Length: 122
Image (cartoon, rainbow, N blue to C red):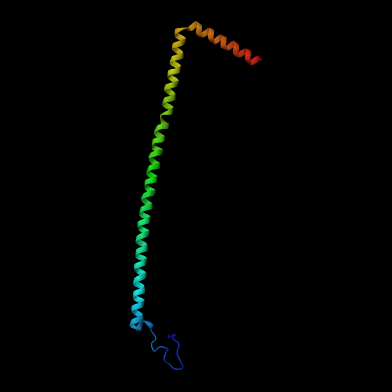
């Protein structure tokens, strides 16, 4: 079906039904298509470069964070062991003090108990 406009007779305006039949118009259209294609390729190349750069920065940030978390975890994991060691040293020191002066320890415990009892009644 031909949708060209005719001027009075059966001949379309301009003499031809296909605008691409004119070599000058076809060359201009082909040039515009090539320019658009090149522009799209340049934009895609720049976008790819930026995505690669951002991806590298994101990977570096994740790796840095993972290293910091691993270091903090290692540092914090030593606390329970240190607490056990400290508790053991304090208990051993108390036992050694009681063994060295048993009568003084019992007397001291009685005095502390008496004072606490007096404070609780008041």
